Image 1 (cartoon, helix red, strand yellow):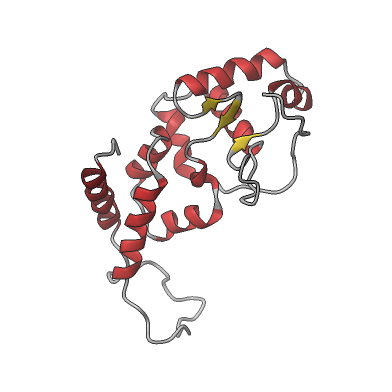
Image 2: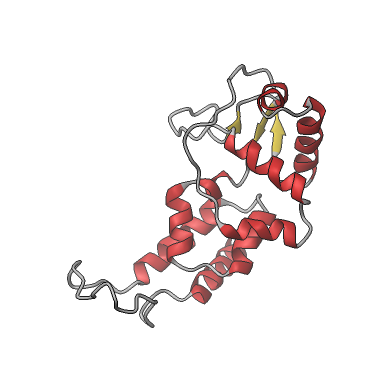
Length: 188
């Protein structure tokens, strides 16, 4: 990759805790997992940058130099992550195919609608899953969610804030994803 951007250590990104299952199920070893997170952190998170959005815009030498490790370490692990499908290389650029799993609005919806851990794990382990499929499933569930008459709350700070039975059931999201999979012929 020939883009000359300095390694970025400012800002933040959202990470679902379920990503750790990539280590648990041995999709990634601990070192690969760390490199994966570091590489995703070096992607372009600015949606206005159409050409580089979701692309790892720092090269391996730049990242290795800033992280005080050997260039070959980053390069070797990047290639392994590409082979596993967690990164995609095209036209000399490396992209994160499931980049939406690191963005606030999408992460927030997955948490809010309580997607089961096994479905979250599937989304991380199979980054080729279309964001459109998951987004349309979430949209359908949002439409089904009962609307409150008012936005104010009568709860005190000591009240139980656990989910009520009226909340969206995580099984509905899973069923919606399966339905979308069948309709689109996807491998979700």
